[in-house]
Length: 293
Image (tube, rainbow, N blue to C red; front, side, top):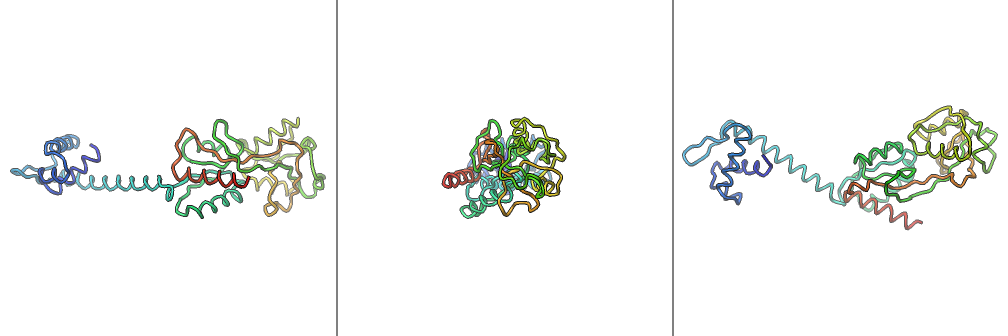
């Protein structure tokens, strides 16, 4: 049975007359009669008692009528919700972003976008690069702000962060103005866990510098890394923070390596069509970043 035939049944149940119901629906009487026969065959019971030339809804029919009305209402509600999601003015954007971008870039972008599209809704996810990629691949997020670039995905650079070596304030490197990563070869390192984009960049920088420093702790968030550095547990490769986000117990020493940088970019799954609201946000972000370039 399909939703159209359920709607026909509801009209027939309300009129209890094939001729009147067919006229109201704008279909022929034989078409309506065949539809009723298919419906009764599907449920395995007669839905009407035949009284002369009229129909009278029976107990089976009353049960189906209750559920048919509910099904029609649910389908109408679902259609309305889908239409709303497809509306660039009121739709939903599923956005995933790195932990480290939750305190600056992402809130700023959303604040500016909401000034232009105040009725668009958001389903936000904050996590590591590998979690973000899994969400894009599985269709659970429409857009992502992440680093480094996921292989095979579209990419628009939003920001480039210089990387530095974070050391305790009383460390022997704390007064240096620049530093080669190779100079920290014997230092204990605090790092993010495997799968994090910054961990991958750190490992690549260490490999390029020809060092394999000991890892004393693998953290789940960048503030934890910097907090442990400030506590004297080791050093870490981190993005150069904004002054208001720097850990007071940490000195941040710029690295001399040209590759000591992290691109933050916007990406999406090109194999999945973006909903209008998500496309609108993507266009907005790329436009304002082009203007500021």
